[in-house]
Length: 225
Ligand SMILES: Cc1cc2nc3c(=O)[nH]c(=O)nc-3n(C[C@H](O)[C@H](O)[C@H](O)COP(=O)(O)O)c2cc1C
Image (tube, rainbow, N blue to C red):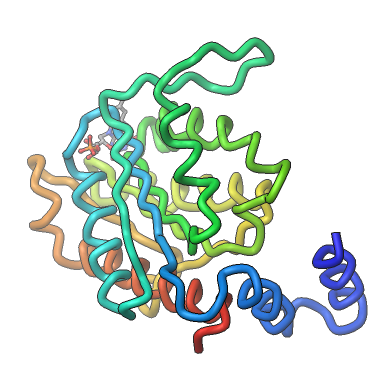
């Protein structure tokens, strides 16, 4: 509550430019000194271990290389049963994922989705909807960086739209949307031609630049410049 009042007052007085400074104080106290910061990568293709998972893993590898404090974990949703939000929830595979998101050492998220009809996958949407409980309690997603990447079968198959959809949705959790480092300003945009996304050097580089930026910002927000 104190954080929110501080943040609101701060925004009113100075605008968003200096927001990171306020957040830094809060996170440094919460995350504490040099404890690990965990970046979770969420791969939201129905096809486990395919292009989207490979791209998210590349982003995570780049994130890990930034600093020894950074830990990474890929959560591949391929093959998992995750329904969208419902007022009458039944148990499914999201139950095993929720504690990982609730971890106080969570440093940030990298969410990857294939472009399905120029949109994020239904699995990705279901994942985002099911994060609803994280808006309550310790609010572990608030003020944490989130980056997004998208893989499509065509060079211009909707990747940028999908990245924007994911980042826009995650604003609902008060996460801090992060693009990649230049020239991958928006995030990861990859072309899966013939089911070998590693052939798309520019796209793979965009995923890596995204991972680097998410990790750098996670460290800054946790008081580690
Ligand atoms: C239902 C469906 C819809 C798709 N829609 C698009 C699309 O709008 N644009 C595009 O370029 N590729 C489209 N694709 C191709 C996928 O984006 C592409 O194969 C991607 O690599 C899938 O991710 P994965 O390799 O991680 O499974 C579609 C594929 C499926 C199965």
